[in-house]
Amino acid sequence: MRTQQILLIVLSIIIVGIAVSVGITMFNAQATNANKQAIISDMNYFAARALVFYKRPTTHGGGGNSWTSDVDNLGMWLGFEYDDSNDELSNENGSYTLSVNDDVLTITGIGTKKGNDSSTSVKATLQLTGSTSNVNTTIVN
Image (tube, rainbow, N blue to C red; front, side, top):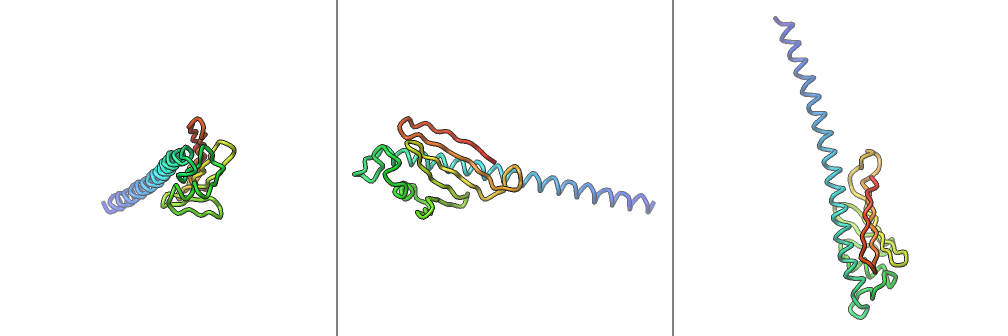
């Protein structure tokens, strides 16, 4: 009888250990997905605000249908914690780099959680074409 009880206890411990392990894995996957969605949501918000900046005349503090007027003004317009030395915004979800190439504004977001590969952070890129208002989002990790 004692052997059966010990066997049941050992088996119970193994099952509980496996359940805890699966739970931790599921929690980490959910945290990664939540950070990925937060990064994309933030970038969409920045894109909407950037488009307002793009279309607003320079006399009213906007870009005057140009991104190249001043990326720093755009960064300040978007708000949050803007670092003009490297054109980077940051908040609790991650950091976002602004870059301009002709009529295309690129926002690259790097999250605070590890991505699907478990080695590099969550990363997504949004490209906004000012003249057509087209948005293209790519999830990297």
